[in-house]
Length: 626
Image 1: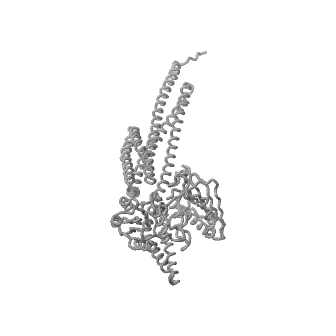
Image 2: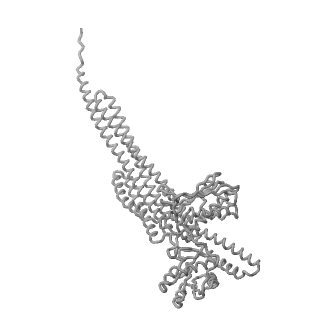
Image 3: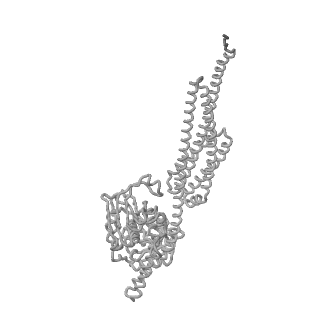
């Protein structure tokens, strides 16, 4: 029987197997090394994306702080802006180092750096203008669109860089995945020879891949946060544009009110004098004078609403017990609204005192009640409720000009027709009304808005068609010492003066000056006049017996406040009474009368003039507009 011999080539199998093992090990090490390098580059791409995102967030922080400072004038925004600027230099340098291996990205960084420098220069220039008092110049820079153009350029460069890094990340991830598959195939083929090595390598590769996926998820989360931030910035920019629009309209109405009030001072004052002198005259003349007087007072009320909306009206805030105010108004509101409307008041126990102009707050409640009545033509229920309220930081962040803190809430709720979302959005716009012609000026809610904002409060509307409306007025809480919150009404009899009480009237408008002199003489005073502040100073120098300086505020050469300061240098004990139809911040700051200031707004009647002059001469009258 023949013996079957093993071929001499059989010893080559162990050698081939050993060679295969060696080659598998070498190949495995090579693939692992390549995969590690690829993974490092993928992580590098993620690192660059994060650095790009951090640079963009700092630029947006500069933009947000810059706009916040121009909106609120709060210097904390400047600190935030400069902190972001300081951080940018280091972050741009890091980005430049991270992209040194990529010529395209290196070019993008070199293009981005001067654009960021332009953005920083633009923000600093406009804030410097604002700090120097040139608010109009700062707003003009914003309105020019240069800031948005620079921001768009920054976003475009950032977008290009993020797109490039995303492409690199995807390419490197694809290479990494291919290498992972090669390792898997090779290890499966040699599973019996290098099982331990293959198992370890595959497990290590999977862990590395998971790490890359986690990094990618982190990048996605960062991108989502950036998108949310961009959305919030856009909303803030929209609020800034709305505030700029409201400020422009306010400036316009303030200018109109100045001239209009001068004319009304002549009309109302002259009609008042004529009616007094014709008290014994024909009945027809008296009725005509009464009609003219009523029309002029309506025009004056319209001017007051314009000033309230533009936040230029002088306010004399006092501590107010809102419960007592609402309770005292119940009878007035019932007479005003009629029997078809059921009025209900819900007054909170332990209510804080608020701080506001009591007459303006009462007018705001009446306006809201009248609006509610018009929304309930078939009758209904009007509920006025008071309570303590706290507006927190989260609420304030989403609403322009709202400061977190404690407020006294007065809410007026009706069961009327309600308002659509579109109407609510425009409800506070001046001259906007849904009422028919002749039934509304469109200034009621805008007047309330201006008064509440000028007082440091907040107003909000909640409504739904067919389910009624609630308007909530938040007035700042008063935390000072307890004071009297209501002023006594003017007496029925006019307080008169005497000829030895000399009053100097300073007014550049001739007809207003003549009326003021005639009215004061009618009240028994000795009245002299000057058409300009310079002439008034000469008269004060030559006539030491002048008891009161009655001066307009808005005049050429020198405003009334400067005239009063000069006059008191000459005569420290001289009493001063200011008057104007438009304050321009001469004796009013942040919407409030300066301490110790006696003020009589135009137009005024002889009755108002009599009480105010007597009050000032007797030692009172400060911080209480008639």
